[in-house]
Figure 1 (cartoon, helix red, strand yellow):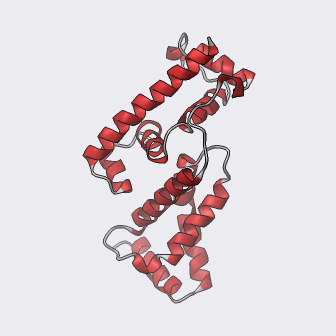
Figure 2: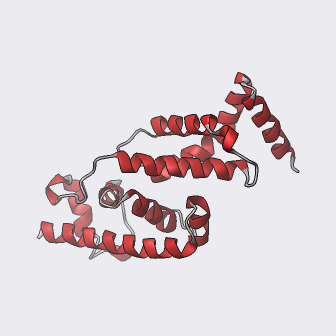
Figure 3: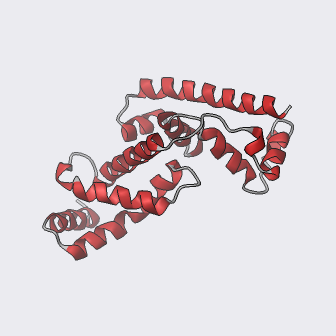
Length: 193
């Protein structure tokens, strides 16, 4: 066992005994991991700090459920992903972004995308904002899959491990999510004509 694992084990024991200093050390240790997961799966308009706090509350309140069968960081990642899915589900979002809701910069980016796809010249954040608006049209599970598979470049096996789904379900849901995302993009394109 590595020194980090021994320290983590000791730290978890101390946290279970309500040691405040150990709790702070655990948060400091997990903060980069939780931040990465939350920022990857949370819509841009939301405050990641609030959701990170919610993740830590769940981790500490469910600490007794951790059995040590998987690495602690993996267990925390699953809690964070589940919390992100719950947040996405709770949000009341419209399934489609209207052309009129886009800023001039976002409209300009969308107009350039089909003709200039190969250059990859996203000079500002407008392309990212358009993508976020399109992702908002997906269900929480679809959004999670697209983010993990396409943006984070994870394999279906990795996604299955993090979500608890089997890899066949991941592939089928990903296919449907891509098809829906393409449909949303085509609807947006038709509205601008």
